[in-house]
Length: 222
Image 1 (cartoon, rainbow, N blue to C red):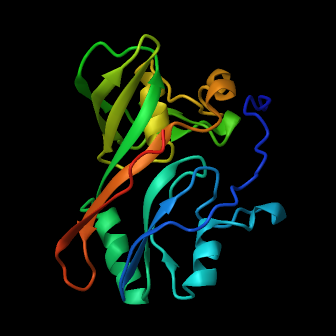
Image 2 (spheres, one colour; image 1 turned 45 degrees about the vertical axis):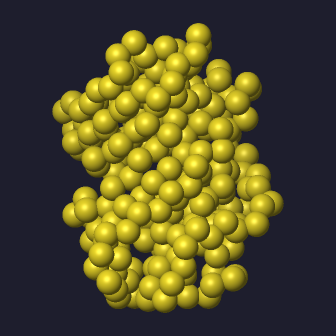
């Protein structure tokens, strides 16, 4: 028997904010994505407003390379040519692209740093949830480092070495410290935070034309 979903209905209400372009040249465009905006159009009719459509209204040649979750903010890169798109796609596929995230998580983490190495897979009964799946899951590795602590939460820098769906969210949940404001994995914290406290802070990869390594940063808004 199919289990009823425990995920609250997703009410899509994208923010009405101007584009924040961090860098652009003839090959790439780097943007600071706001939380609450899909990267690409959703399947339902009322989810067509998204970052790539807004960007293409201003830069017609923008092409998708990778995605950030709707509720995640931060650095995201787009290509301006098919050649650049293919090159950047390989940067991510071959794990040459490096990303760091800032997150605020529930509870106080005692240790200063660590690595989470837990395979992840879809939780088919509760989609779009993902779960730790030692049998059928795909390898997933995340480094974490504490930046600051309060009496009730911890601020961490997260460095994923793989790019699984919801990886950071599920890994921190598995550590016992879910990311605050997470509608899917920590719904009881959304009332006080209003958004998922997860932000893509840096992105480093090779430029598709110069082949030099370039880095882009957007400071967390929380």
